[in-house]
Length: 236
Length: 234
Image (cartoon, rainbow over all chains, first blue to last red; front, side, top):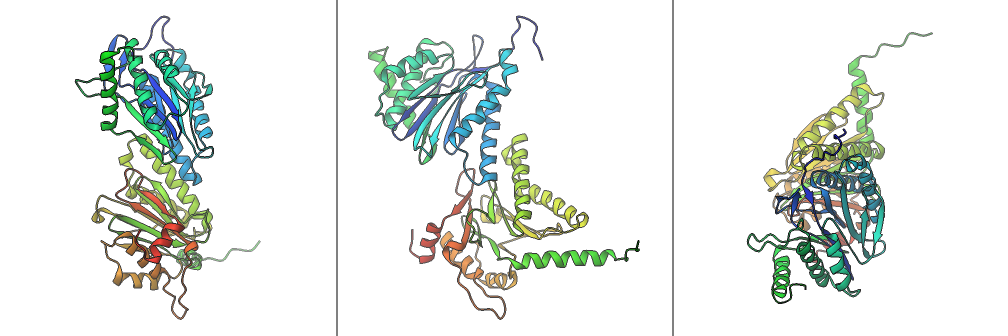
């Protein structure tokens, strides 16, 4: 399939994902907006998914392709686990995802790129790890924190200034949501907390005990604290 | 060149059945039974890596007796079938009935066409929202499917174990009671044989726990079994 020169396909795009490591594992959070050109395609889309019991994947880029890629990735990890009787290593999972992104290269050349962020708890090493990718399937391990998507520049700036090596899980959740707020502040495609509709970021936490989605009341409390603070200091 | 003897189809089938039955009876028994919070799958298996009971899908498990390589083949085919169906359509479209049918076709074809039948007997179990919704299917080497209620005993000397369970199995037993009952039943001796206790580290046990979200299958480790068998409440 080749598009005429200059033409692009209009499809919803996911925007900003952030990941932050902490002493007991890793946190991943994503805003809730999908855009199609200047239009907000969806205001409550979920872009951070559990990949398996010890890892999660967040997606930026063409939402339709990315969500399908995640679905296949989840099936593959579970399939491996059942056939082999053991969980795949975190590096194995990261490599598998890299391969799947490379498979999408032809579509990426047409403007339909998928750029996920992968994070998980490495059971062998006992630490949380983050992997980023480029459209050709290049896999890069990130340290401490990372962000992808249209608002990632602003989110990364915020993370760089506020990240501490001794962050706890609670600190990391706060840090991630804070970074998303900054991304939404400066990037029109990233959705900020929607106080009227109560739509707040999706936050996943992976530790040695496995993956859990940080429950809504917890996220709500963090978001409300951040918003209250920004009332007096908009820059954070 | 000599002319081959004529052997009637009845004789061929009978021989194949006898052959398969003998193979299955040689091993140890595996027991699958319902309890209040799900389905318990337990068997004697000193091997830690080669499982007799395993997970197929979110709410579906597999238990087998007989030749390992043959039922492992079936297990892998089952996982493929389930993962493929669930990916293609939806997770809720993977059912134990569909899987049991697929197994029945495969076993039936092997029984009639292959030189040697599979020496296996398998159970496909699916846990439902309540005990009444639990489904147990027994599949035999010739491709026959039977839906059973309450429990299934396969392999080894199944008959005395089934008899022992028939009177004592209750649908609303808790997990500890169910495990103790299952192990007591599995230790039932064959006629004329001595009673034999199964050592804890030779027990392979797992549950399909209906209270767990999504993937209901969970193995019960030696430690957990130890506490249950000591009778000390967790």
